Image 1: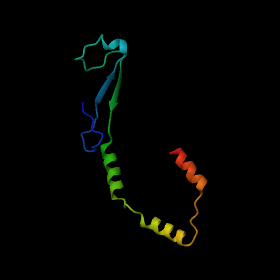
Image 2 (image 1 turned 120 degrees about the horizontal axis):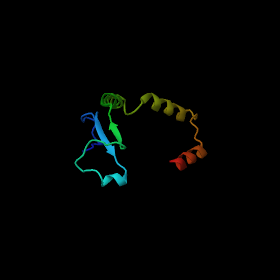
Image 3 (image 1 turned 180 degrees about the horizontal axis):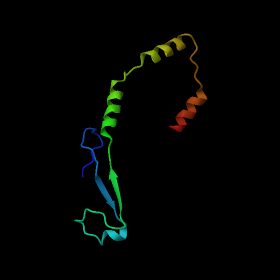
Image 4 (image 1 turned 30 degrees about the horizontal axis):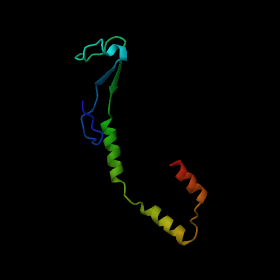
Length: 96
């Protein structure tokens, strides 16, 4: 199975099962067996591609530069109202 982490336009993964085996069971089962046996865990992968695609479209429609924020910051700097707290900046840098 190929997993494309870069593309968002693949077929949905509905119904794809991934059987999990304990290490001791790995040698006892056949490599050709695709159905989980009793005592095995199984995972089903699903992708909500419609919701992902709508979120991607919304993000792509957003403006690169929010002019209202830029103008508000410009006015604050020009009026001397924009204050920086060096301690907060240092803390944020350390957290990152």
